[in-house]
Amino acid sequence: MTPEDAAGCLSLDSAEVATLPLIDPGAIDWPRVTRTAYLVHQAFHYDYPEPIADLEHRLLLIPPAVHGDQRLVAHRLEVGCASPHTLSSDSDGFGNVVVEVRVPRVQSTVRFEAWSVVERSAAAVPHRVSAAALADPRYVRPSALTLPDAALRGAARAHRALPLRGLDLALELNRAVHAVMGYEKGVTGVSTTASEAFAMRAGVCQDFAHVMLALCRMCGLPARYVSGHLLGEGGTHAWVEVLTPVDEGSAAEVHALDPTHGVPVGSRHITVAVGRDYGDVAPTSGSYRASCAGALTARRRVALMDVEYAV
Image (cartoon, rainbow, N blue to C red; front, side):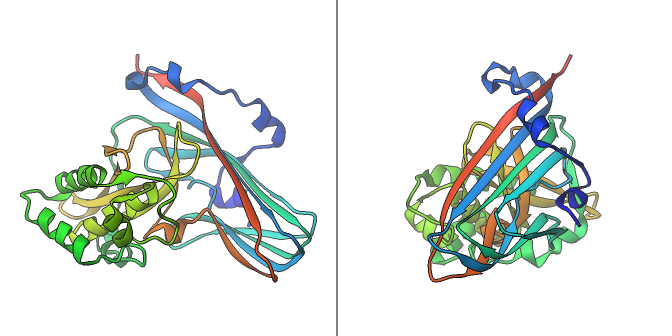
């Protein structure tokens, strides 16, 4: 199976990528927008000081075919390596598109580069999933990076005492995490837990999401981690999806909230993958045999391609 088969959409070629039109987001009348289209570019370059063997790499770079009002229109994935390699893709347990790359021997460098074109609708159409997600232990119980300590449990207890339930409680938690946490680069890493970030009251978007996930789950709100992009930011972004019952529990409604900015997610957010926490959705991960470590250079960009306005 190829990545194109997994996503079920058109594949871009290099010439098409180079000629795709781009629009200045600052020139857009955003309140009138009904539909947007974006080009997402992600590139990861690994350099090794000596040859390595048995490289097995896992990539989560391709957005889902459909996620709420978001649709994957086309994409391209390239692996740059002088050695022969194999490429396969499948869906994981969360429905994410996972590409597996295997290279028996890398002489010095390997590159992964992905381009995706996605569309989003600004229409207020509820995003629904199966009611089974409401009881999914992956979204209800603490995960490795969201295991609470006494301080987080105390914060959750205070929020449970509020006369708020469902979406109203989720919105309050989103506001509260934004208010109490300060955005600060360099003080946390990919293995920092929600408890550690909450103790510092600082971190990046990943930490804001982990703290909110911990609080949501302790407050009885099933919630999942979202990895993606936000127009105007150079790197990846992270936020939270909270699930609430609708139609007497026959379905679940998905509410995407961005605690880093303290707002509901809008049409400028682009979802790539969902999971329990960052550990499930790292864009690149893998293993190899060598006596040395490699150096990673990463580049990411989201560009606006097309806009439709309400008449």
